[in-house]
Length: 110
Image 1 (cartoon, one colour):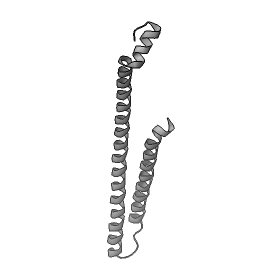
Image 2 (cartoon, rainbow, N blue to C red; image 1 turned 90 degrees about the horizontal axis):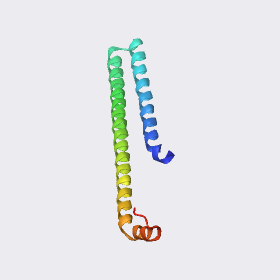
Image 3 (cartoon, rainbow, N blue to C red; image 1 turned 180 degrees about the horizontal axis):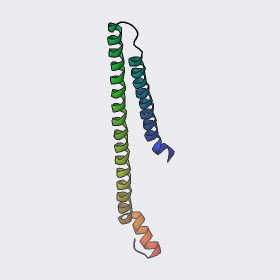
Image 4 (cartoon, rainbow, N blue to C red; image 1 turned 90 degrees about the vertical axis):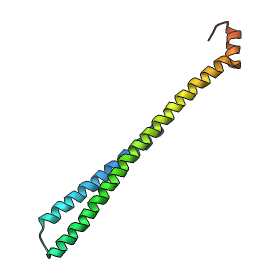
């Protein structure tokens, strides 16, 4: 079960790390606005750099969320096809040689 859930846990961990980076960026923006040092151009350039960092963090967060849902839907699809193939295999075995051997030796129907 650990190997089955490992991709989900890894993705959620990545999403948590992206959230921590996003929080740090917001704290940096708050601290930058509280300290009014330097000229107006420095403040505008600094705000531009911080806004760029914020947008990059948001972009990484959206990518992580999309990746989580993509991996979860892939796992659901794999489990669906696994169950479907098992039921098809059981139906095939019932009508084929193993089913015939079972009915012959035990006298019971499957």
